[in-house]
Image (tube, rainbow, N blue to C red; front, side):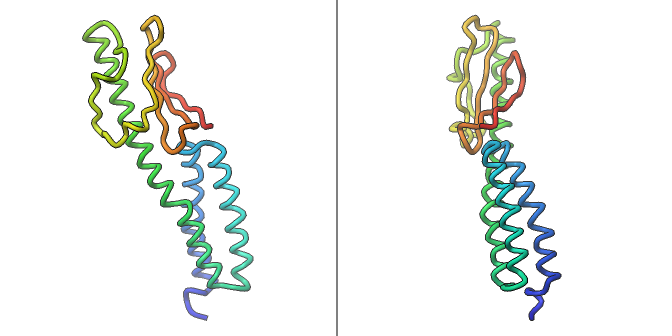
Length: 164
């Protein structure tokens, strides 16, 4: 048995990967919604549990499986986590633009045609900007990884989120 196939190495690998996978499953709540977050969590528990059992019979396969499970979850959620930070920052700038427009003109903008995106890559993730019929309030909707999991800022309610 080589060092890579030792129980100590497998325990160390899981000690590193499991918290990272769980973090990504929790992050998925914000990026993909509660259903995918729960699916990730169940998958992490079941697959890693299976890998622990497999380790006693096929150590190399269990080690490879642990890496594959992590690679299926972690990189994609890291990308979505970055997008979450960036789209929230762009939305914050849109909110500031709406308030600045009202301070200058006395009314919120009717749409975002006068707004210049700072991070143009985030423009597709801004779902909509709506102005209430009476013009007193506005709402900016955005998403990260799934358009069914909406985040928004409402001038009357503040920041909020619907996970699915």
